[in-house]
Each structure stands twice: as structure tokens, then as C-alpha cells.
Length: 318
Image (cartoon, rainbow, N blue to C red; front, side, top):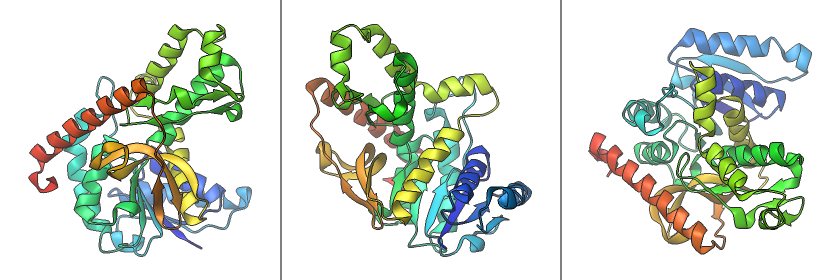
């Protein structure tokens, strides 16, 4: 069986471990600097195996050697947002954490496919690739799947349509600058513009849903008060790992390295990609309307500015 190591045994890490076990996707190593937290959650999940019928080995540890030769590494380590805190506020703290993680995984699992969930996502995944020097196609960020899932859910909730009948995706940076691809959004096979035109979806309501999606994480933080989203982020990360391990070649919106695609060079940005056994196998370039292009470029600028801030904190990222 394949091996997935989860760096960070917090809420997302624990949920990831549980989902991976339930799906019988791989053996799991749950790593955390707090060894008791990792071991406790691993043991708790393992004790459900007789009920759930899975035969997956789950181990908790604080030793990076136990993650050696992982097929997939999913990184959630970092400080979660608190009420009133933006993803950008996390930058300085989580850059230090991701550098420590990079030191831990770059020699133990140099061939792993690495999925980063730590915020602020686009910049942290860029830093992770720089620190590890892993190939760009083997380092990717989880963002677009989550933003897309939120957008589809909010549309489903408002329109009374099953989520399975809604097709859409989100591009750009993770967070306030994300761009909902309305020209590529279909409700039960019909373009969303048609619903707006015939009055079934009011323009102001659609704008509200888009803004709610942008602030989807902050809304949950406000409710939880002492934590941030973990169920939906974990599900999104597992979908990426599954596509890689089982060579499903799914088209998924992820934070991937661009080298000229969409007119962007040397930057990690949320775009649709194909994930298969070679990691990010292809960046899918779609036609953007003038408005989508404008919003996408604004999102790119936001990511660039934040990366420049990261360089000021750690000049080695230049």
C-alpha cells in the first residue's frame, strides 16, 4: 500500500487521516511536533477500523524519519487564522514553520508529491518549493478545489439544485482575490448567465454568493471563534492525493507553478491542471472574458505583492 504523510496533526491533519483511512487510499503517518497529539489521533482513528472495515496502518510521530519514502505528503502545519486575522497576517509566522517542514521532508521523501494547505496558500507553496528545491510539478497548493466547492454549494443552496448538477471553478489567488469563472459555470447544463437573464438568479444575489465564497474561510472562523475550516479543506486535499496515487488525471483547480501560461511566469497561482502519476501533468489554459482576464490579473498582482512581502521577511526566497 502507498504511504501518505500528513505534516500537522491539527483539525485538518486529523480529518485528512480519517478520510484517507475510510477511503482505504494509503497507509498514514500523522506527524506533529506535539507527539502526543499525533499519536492520540492516530490511535483513535485506528480503533475505528473494525467498525469501518478498513485495514490501513496509521501511525503518529514527531520524528521526520517515520515519514521517509512517502508517496504523498500533505502539509497543514501552521498557525490557523483567528477572528479578524487575514491570511496575509499569517505570512511571517507560517513562513518560519514551512521552512522547518521543508528541512524535514526534503531529504526523507525527495520523490514525494507534495500538497500544501497552509495559508497564505499561494505564497507558502511557492516558499515550500524554493526551500525544498523539489520539481515544480511535484509541489502544488490546495485552494481552487475548496473555493470551487464553496461556490457550488452556495449556488446549490440558493437555487435548490443538487451540487452534482452544477459545474464551475475558481481561478487566481486563494482568498479575497479569487475569481469565479462565470462564463464557465453551468446550472443543470445551462449557462449561469441564462439564469441571470431570465430572472431566476438575481445579479445582486450572484454578487453576494461570489463575495461569500471569497470570504468563505473567514465566515467559518467567525463562527468557530477558536479555529478555522477543516472538513472541506481536508476533502479537497484527499481528492488531489487520490488523483495522483491512482493516476486519475482529473482536471482540478490548484495552485500550480506557471511558466508562461496565462501570461504569468515563475509564480504559483490557482489554475485548472491535470493531476496524474507524474504530478501536475498539464496546465489547462481556458479562454477568459475581458472581465475575467481583468480580475485574474488583479489576483495575480495580489499574489505578487504578497510574495514580495515574503522576500522581505526571508531574502533567500528571491
